[in-house]
Amino acid sequence: MIYGIGVDIVNIRRMRRVIDRWGTRFINRIFTAQEINHCFQGPKSVSSLALRFAAKEAFSKAIGLGMKNGIRWRDIEIVQNPNGRPGLNVTGEALSFCHRQGIGRWHVTLSDESHYGVAVVVLEKSAT
Image (cartoon, one colour):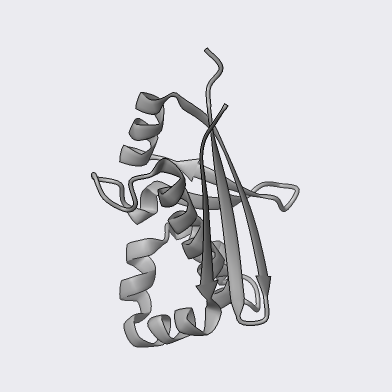
């Protein structure tokens, strides 16, 4: 059963301005080391970071809390599965919240075009 759905759109040019202004201070606050390493391996690092930011926002909308109640940005990690499909690694208070709510599966999709990126997250409750 679906627990929640979240969607977020991000302006990639705006993300570039944020990174230009705040640099590693912003990047290290929002992203895990694995996300940072993955994003800076390719030619579209800012786009990759922007999509991951949108996915974290979409997750926070799907759980219905936003980024509060102890949930931190780095509790939500966007990973690449071996087949290239994005996935979520949820830890910390975000994972604890999911366990309390019976959320056992999560799905994410990312897409970008020109100056915009979008992420959708679907959370599923475990079958009871």
